[in-house]
Image 1: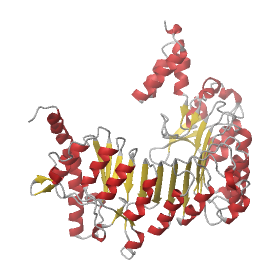
Image 2 (image 1 turned 45 degrees about the horizontal axis):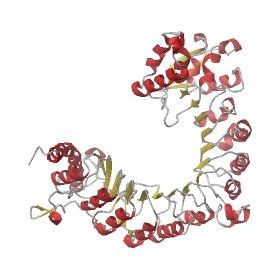
Image 3 (image 1 turned 90 degrees about the vertical axis):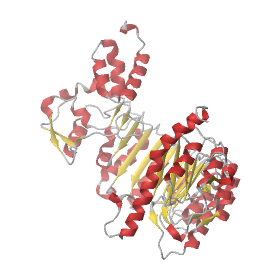
Image 4 (image 1 turned 90 degrees about the horizontal axis):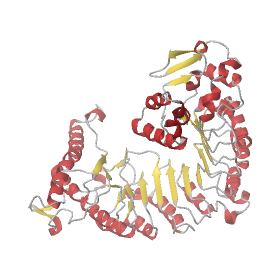
Length: 541
């Protein structure tokens, strides 16, 4: 009977089993049951491997040994030189590998086994074919493997992610970059993590970019990108996502003079991610992107930005050709969870309603602002909720401890407009007052119920920063009425384990009190939800 099963059906069943059981042993035992199951089951098992160490088990047992490494890691070394006959079993398994490394969405997130550096070099020199995995489509390599990447490059590769260190001391890394365009003509996604300003590296990246005729996603993280590379990418016909770190030498004058078609630069881009030092570098770069299809803009900056500098970013966005298409806007510092410098001029850095209201001209689904104080009230938040009915995520300045220097004016009640007007809302973060739910023992605004009947059935997360809380029961009761599926509340308050020993007893006591009260809200919430459900079902009157 098993011989009559379609192999594609068996592969689908195996993939489901792997997802549900998260145990490769289940499929391994299934593969041993009969011949009809072997091929499709092994295809699924070997579709993704996290490490070259797994190949050692295809070699004769006398060729390798396992030794303890650092921590939980175990290192595999070779005991003797490898010969062609040792690789016979490779023909059965290696052609099935489609993904290699710690790739997102794969079953093998990591492996505790590693080949030693000498073992990798021996495998590279002794491999039976130029490419170990002839059908490989995606790979992610850590720094130690990049120079050996040629044994993985092949015409079927679509996605390559490389983490590189010591580029000048490892010429093999540069040779790998040079070979990618020739060996991988169908490459659509290239991600390079490398913190280098060396000219030899930037020159190699320019040569590499010139050969990527099919590139759709290009990410060069941590290293500044040169104007020459930008000129090449600007005219790429297929580029849809660009993640780069422009600096003062990238823009604007050098780039403007080197672009071949300035009027059509990055004309089909849909996602733009900029990692900059001063925020002004991002503001200067945005006008050079002419695409009217941009749906996502993410900017992370290192130098503290004033409100005026952030407003300049907003102006650049509002005057951009893609302003009607833009759905995601994130402007974030790379330093999160910090306290505002007491010597810093707070008004200079604080975003207000006046700063944010111009953004209502956009049709945002995501707005994330981190690294700047945000001072807004309930009216502004309600206007946002009404203006952005497709909103899924809103995060406004909840990563900074501002305390009494900037007490929040918005209240917990501002959650209600988002529940009423944004059916897809999944994440809300803003600093809030929580002691506004009752006046002389009665619900505020005369509501018969805390949320006046507004309720979302979608799963919701909240972030409240350093918002203070006085009555956990009232807050939990309110939240259970409007968002019964709320499952997470993030705060900047710390428990005893996170507080430094040199802090004053008063500060420690206050920290723990706020932390515990917010923690109790999440504990109380499921119990109040059950009561609310009974009320809605008419079991309680």
